[in-house]
Image (cartoon, rainbow, N blue to C red; front, side, top):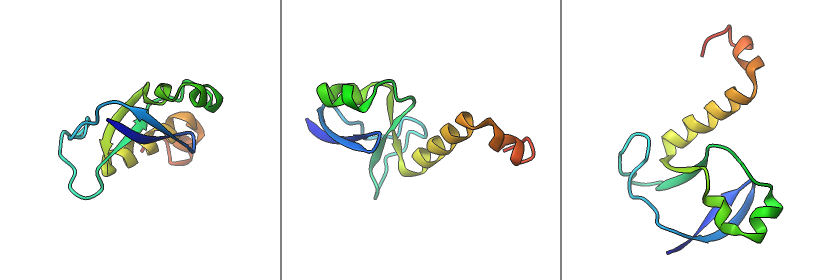
Length: 90
C-alpha cells in the first residue's frame, strides 16, 4: 500500500503497511487517524529524496494526542534549558 509521509517538512510517497491502532495508547483513532512520529531524524532530506523508504525508519504510529505529547517530549529533550526555565520539573 502506498501512502505519504512527512520527513523534515518534505513529503514523500512510500510503500508499507499502516497500523489501525496507536502504538502508545493502543486505541483506534476515530477522527484524525494515525500520524507517523519520527523518534529521531537519522538522515538528511537529500538522502531520503534518493531513497524515500528511509523516511519510515525510526518511526512509530501514534494517534493525534500521543503524537502531540511525543513531539513535546522531543523538544524538551533537545533543549535542557527549558527544564530549568520551568523550575526543574515538567
